[in-house]
Amino acid sequence: MSTRGNMIGMKMSDGAEIGVYHVEPKGARRGGLVLIQEIFGVTEHIKECCDKFADEGYEVLGPALYDREEPGFQATYSPEDIQKAIKIARGEHPFDLSVKDTQTCIDALKTKGKVFITGFCYGGTVTWAAACKCDGLAAASGYYGGQIAQMNDLNPKCPTILHFGENDHGIPMSDVEKIKTAHPDVKVFVYPGVGHGFNSDRRADYNDEAHKLGMKRTLELFRANGG
Amino acid sequence: MTAQYWEDVEIGARRDLGCYTFTEAEIVAFAKKYDPQVFHVDPEGAKKSIFGGIIASGWHTAAIWMKLAIADRKRAPRESPLARAGISPGYEDMRWIRPVRPGMRLSYSSQIVGKRELSSRPDLGLVLTRNEARDETGALVFCFTGKGFVERRPRSGELSQSHTLSALLPSEQSGEHP
Amino acid sequence: MTSTLYFEDFHIGRTFECGPYPVTREEIVEFAQEFDPQPHHLDEIEAQSSLLGGLAASGWHVCAMTMKMFADHMIPLMAARGGSGSREARWIRPVRPGDVLRVEATVVGTKESRGRCDIGHVTFECRVFNQRELAAMVYMTPVIAKRGGTP
Image (cartoon, rainbow over all chains, first blue to last red; front, top):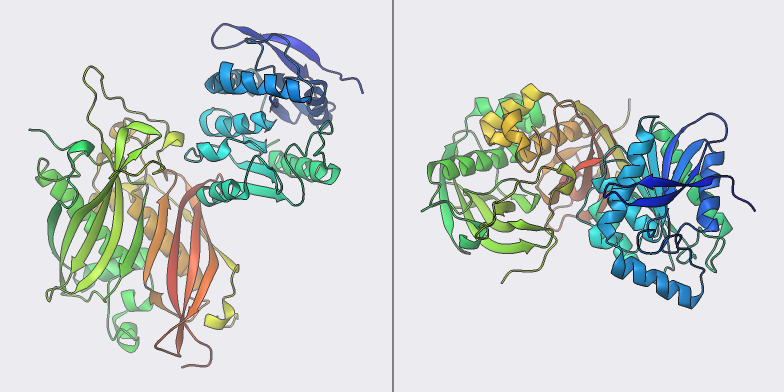
């Protein structure tokens, strides 16, 4: 399946230029969307996710967050690549830089209308942090962010939904409960019987039903908030 | 000697916040606005209720605690452990134990019962208080556990900063302070 | 005409929608002057350099507005005998002039009275939302409800 967007270069707030996958909406423009990668970089899968949202009427920007550390970084799901990706995510790349880069992408889209955000895994955590810290977001939908429970004392500035797999080995249900309790205004969806990464059809945990339901909920959220 | 920073606050320190006498007119005025149950707003209806007469809203009793607490901090900024207190993340365990009737004179007090550092904020600490109102016989009428963020002493060489992003309001997630 | 709700009618999970309550600057300042005269509840300029980042209602005022919404909705519905307190209260976000609040009150617990057969205790979790569907406050409150069939 070939993707229909383009990698463009965008200058970030620290002056560095990183690659950003950009795809125009099909049909009438409903709004802008920043889509945040997993730890594997802006892969074909992430580009396909961006295209799917573009099909629904969103102009999408998917920043390649690790381009400063490893230009053009893309990892497979092999154990070696996963280790390399984790090394960058947890060691070399400052998390705050991802939030700043997200703000730059929001700023690029907000002159044209409402801006939304979604992200998966590492991108789910960035989505949460952006919902809490960035300006100009109309709504946020974060998937299985592993560090969200560690950022539990932040409060989102916009309506936010989160998605977790019931059987996610990396995110215990006790963490999910902590998030639910602290944030009565955040709809936390738990997908029964699925594990981490359920939205990605490249991963063993992919679950088509959960993917479709998550997408439906995300689009409903965006539409309810001007998108 | 300046007002106490979080580091100076002593566990066990107690303040008498003073007395307050509730009148029927102000009980009814508050309750008409904020707690319009019959036994708070209607003298005739209140007589027929289980309380036998007008009683103050529990929220009014609580609001008077706040009124007296702020007055105490302003009146005695060096003595009050909470003179540098700002906002609060919430409270626990508020109990309206006995009815507060018109003419009743309540004595309010506040005692420091705990302190906690905040992992999310180096410039603020949390202080826990046990707050009470007692009637003229000394019986406990109202109590709750309060929480307040108190400025920490600026480290030498650093200016203390004010953070104004409302999305970064601190909560109490932190380690325990002995 | 809806019939009165008694203790037995409050099953866990039942939610009541209360409100709306439009919040005005005048009312924020009036309440604060009387009960919580701190600068960040009284003056916009002073409030901007505070943690609240702008004029906001006293947390006690938010409690009071919540009680008003709850009472307005629930008193006509239920045979209540007052509340006994409030716990696990969190002031989550500032409430600003122009906000419109609403309350979702959900039954989270019911308990028969140990000493009395004519009343029971119903605990509500009250969640206060602003017009952007963001939570301003949460607290639990036990309410005393008459049992069915008693005068």
